[in-house]
Image 1 (cartoon, helix red, strand yellow):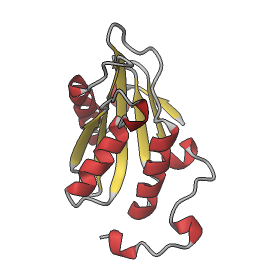
Image 2 (cartoon, rainbow, N blue to C red):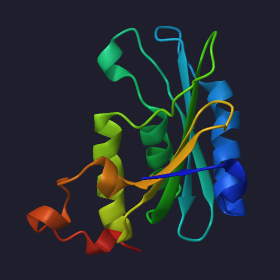
Image 3 (spheres, helix red, strand yellow):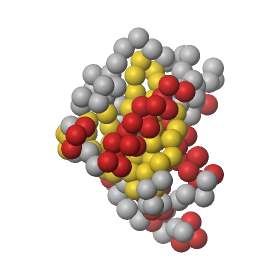
Length: 158
């Protein structure tokens, strides 16, 4: 885990974080009033965004990170190198970074194995004044994915 400032990010990392910040404005969060934006960076540098979408039946809520992964998959993009995540409340900016929930960590771990890489995770406060760059393996140590149980997912590794 590395604390970094915005200026130290690469141009592509900055673009992903900025896109995540832009898309969080589309969040549907009437229950938690906590808006999250995510932006994936594919192997070829394409940026795919997602935002949270809540539901009155809380367990049906979709997090921004998973929304971005599902959107990338629908676009035929399987190889994910990085994801940027940023959040804010209805009436407050975050003062600490917001990490992916456990479900999102599991999905990102799966995509990291599809991608044959340890997916980089960029976490930021609303004002981008505190940023952590880490990896999915660091956020989910001893994770369980298809490689770990001997599944052949080679057809998904396009």
